[in-house]
Image (tube, rainbow, N blue to C red):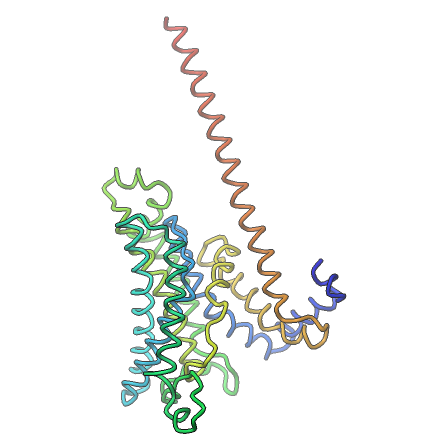
Length: 342
């Protein structure tokens, strides 16, 4: 409908988008590159969903991880390549975890709504980024030139992520994302901690009665959620080679869509992540051939979110009705049995 309002041919637009993303090897590679940070963010969102916690703060957690990764790579630039890359990824992981821990602590201890706190943490992270990229982390070359563009210095080339295919943008972060998806699957369904997270999400009261601590699980899940987003930010920095003036826009919210579209399952998001990555990668060619602005992808993503949310609401309504019917039947049986006994 939106494409028709723009006087564009929907078939031509979608053909151009998916042709640009999947029709060539370069498009496939670009789709995988775009999907990598989305997968990492979605992994954290999945863990939070399983604990019945909603994290809207991935944008801020990505920024926190990217800032820490930039500082670490520039501060310890003399380290060997493999050690510097590992340390930078872990630094981003830790910074994202710390940024996610704060709203988790507020919810667990003070009952603060995690949606509000994570949104506010996004704003804090954005302002922190502006301050650091205009001050402590600004590129000295920009200062000398008098341009003062808010971006960081280039990190050492030996800290850049290894290219899986020479002369392309496909980097080792894609393999890391896939391996972490498998690890999260085993974590949630094959470990005691994962079982506790899912138990708390299903019924906090029953979990507490069984000796589990919902508060600890909330803080843990929010920290893990932030950690994966922070690693996504670190991987993007090691891919680009510096912290640009505009960074991480929409990755956090796209990750939520990937998680929902993948049915909050670590394996499902591998496919939904590639789908959204392909949409982002093919948008420029769609704009060129079908004369449709790339922002239409945000509209399509919004429609997807509306339908996914509606599905969740409908399921809950039907479950509520089924529970009421069961309760009514149980009351009828109990009343009938009581009358017979009497």
